[in-house]
Image (cartoon, rainbow, N blue to C red; front, top):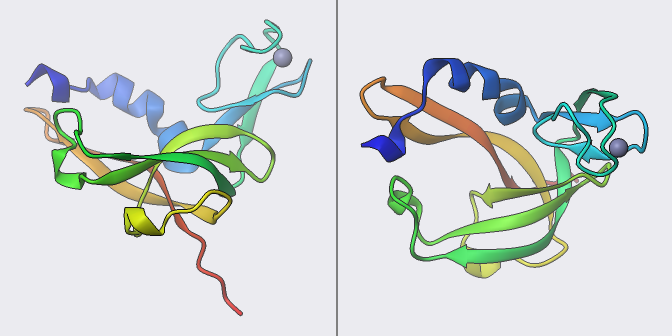
Amino acid sequence: MWAYWVSVPSHWREIPARYRLEGGICKNCGHTMLPKEDVCPSCGSRDVVTKQLPRRGKVVNYSVVWNAPRGYEYYTPYVVALVRLEDGTMLLSQLTDIDPSQVTEGMDVEMVLRKVRVSGESGIIAYAYKFRPLIKSD
Ligand SMILES: [Zn+2]
């Protein structure tokens, strides 16, 4: 069951990034990141502050997963996509609420919160962001 184990403290530390897309921006070079890191991976500056990332973006590229890692078999087949948020931040995310055959590069997506897994004996139900096709109101 080790693969499912998530300590309670690390679970709480990850909440801002996983629940709210709270990332970071480097005040030196403008690089944005998720999760926020202490040191900018782009320029090495430590001048990184918290930034609320936009919840909408576009699929840049994607891959359909047929052989899932343990704990994720339930979702197969599912799509993992490289998403470019409206501010340019790139992140990897599972897509949800869509048949894998319907996914296209460039499609508009928005963040939603979804259950990811239940962690072993602690019983923590992990939620995290996923992206779904943008529901347009026109
Ligand atoms: Zn930087």
